[in-house]
Figure 1 (tube, rainbow, N blue to C red):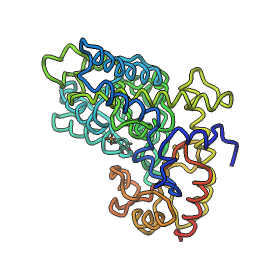
Figure 2 (figure 1 turned 90 degrees about the vertical axis):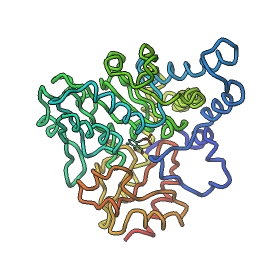
Figure 3 (figure 1 turned 180 degrees about the horizontal axis):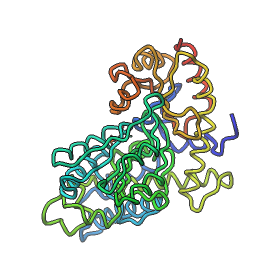
Figure 4 (figure 1 turned 60 degrees about the vertical axis):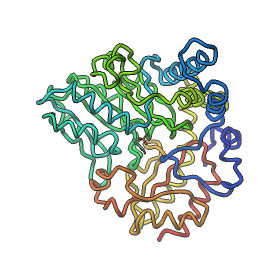
Length: 410
Ligand SMILES: Cc1ncc(COP(=O)(O)O)c(C=O)c1O
């Protein structure tokens, strides 16, 4: 394995789960379903519940502190994404957030407009938009290659014209793992006057992106997969957010942060999300001068990606050599996140159950990307085996996984 920029022991000391007695010997390969929570997040959550669990943004000291703790999250999550705080909206989950956005777009688009959706996405970034056909919006499908599960820009180009007002695509598929070229997708959409909605749920755990560089108009992710609490973040270009019709109470129409998240905010979890940024800064510190980047967030991103590429290399080498294994998405670790799905003769969940006996925590199924599985010829009920890890996974856990796969795969 090539040199790791991050010392696994020091990283793992930042997560209570790795010290939890009941989890000893259990190697976690289900991170794409939800990551372990950083101590910095738990500390903020506990502090909020203990010291400031009152109505925020009021006139008394505890209330003012609660509001300040929430504002800190808006500011610092924005900074980590290289956008201003007014881009940031917190809702209950990414699926709930896109559901609300779908309703907002129903009032923003008109019959005869076209939108582009993919069949690579998790249902959260496609079902909500496909429903717009009910109001006469033309839905065009950007389809994956049936063999590899990959999206090509040439296929997107063939769908774009001046009728298209929105392109929805994943930064990274939760099955194919491929890192899609968001900056190119957004530039192409812009060239015909369309906005871009990017699902970053499967990308953000591998380093928060620089949204100014990507150029997407909406970028969303789920903080419970990024070492944080169970929330969904939507970064929305403020000028677009202002154009979208209000989805909240009518008297909140003039409050930008209340218009697109009608669920009452989870104050404590919003405040705790600043702990994600604390964690990213700690990762940048741990990496020291082993990585480059303009700020701690770009350095954390570079360190996390380099770490994951080094860890994924032996696993992909092993999987590539197994004739009974079909890897969905690219097999080059540099082109993908370490969310590695494989199609096997047996159903994914059956093999996952056997891996559990080797102390491997993994899952099988379609993971709500049913359309993608169908597109690459896999029955969603049969499903794939998904092995998903992140930068805190240790080389020893990768070895444990390879040994378990060696014992259980044909
Ligand atoms: C790629 C992707 N998009 C969207 C979602 C939905 O996120 P949430 O659970 O926050 O609704 C998931 C959840 O697994 C996902 O993997």
